[in-house]
Length: 230
Image (cartoon, rainbow, N blue to C red; front, side):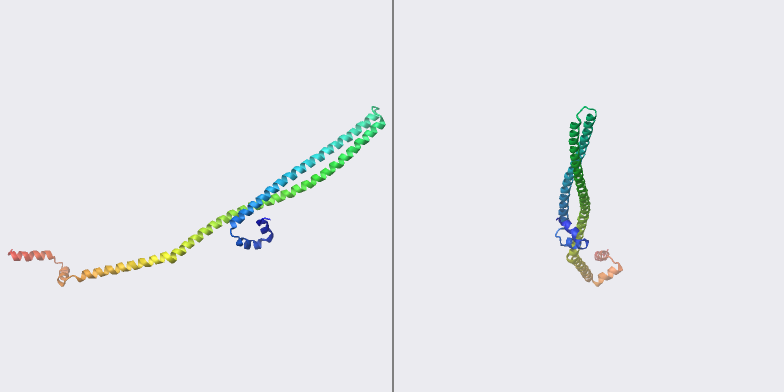
């Protein structure tokens, strides 16, 4: 008995627990469908054989029924011949009696074959019901398999994304942001230090000239002109 026949028997309430215990639900479902297809092939083969047997039995019953009618007709002809003096009455009646006995035997055989054909027809109908159920279940579980495969893909993709996100958040992103923050703070402090150093090298005169906008080159030129008496 395949896995799906077992599942069908234990009931809907326990199906989920059985599926949860399967190591690979997809492979198990595929295996169950293959087994049901094997059952379907066997049922179709049995159906064809029983159907053919029912047809042959019915044909034989009809044939014997026709033969019985022929012997009845022959008995009538024999009696007609005796009536018209074409055949001795005693002989005609004896042959007619034999014909009627054969007719009776053929009728009995025809009736028996008809009963057998009816039994075969019932078997054919039962097999047809089984085939319909198998086809329905195969179609149902193939749809279930397609849904299951899609759900597994989505589940695996979601699990992988969540895993990557959890890994990044805990290990990479936060650490990287902390390092970037420290680097920016270091650069800002260094910039302020250089600025302080540059301001500290100026003399009071430089700061005054800078405040007044005095150009040191103009001052040097005036000093040189005074030295030359210009």
